[in-house]
Image 1 (cartoon, rainbow, N blue to C red):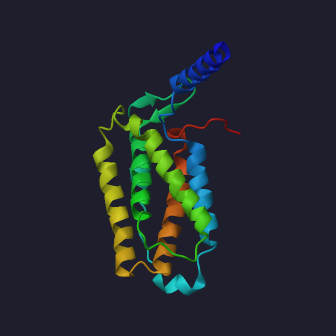
Image 2: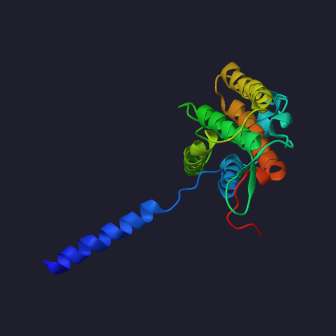
Image 3: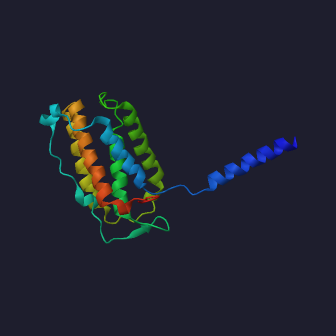
Length: 195
């Protein structure tokens, strides 16, 4: 009986320790990099047979522009640009929404696609708590650019009836978007161990 009580108390103390640890509440740079790599690996290069379906979509670089605006302390080691972080968060939400359809290409690597969707969803859930505490006074201008961009992407998918080539155009756009975020907005992401 005493051994059983000790085992239960040990299990309880372990659970208390685990649940009392701080949960990440910021955009994780490694996860954004993982989504980019998975998206790139899902289908390879842009298919030649889809060149006629490739359309120009103006990328909203201004939505991700860093400003001299307020900074939010995310940890002892890094400062996050609140509007930049919000723009990245909204981008991930839009990606999640578009990839939430049942009409995804079967020609893509389905395991990588599933991992991609799970990591995007995880990133949204883990950083949701940060969004209520950031100052986003300059965000409306950024939001308009993102709304137009993702509206155009959704329109291309619908116009081309969610075809494989339409999804390849979307994949190309999202690869560029994630690459842009990683190159130009890495200061808005939390990096656990930068090398």
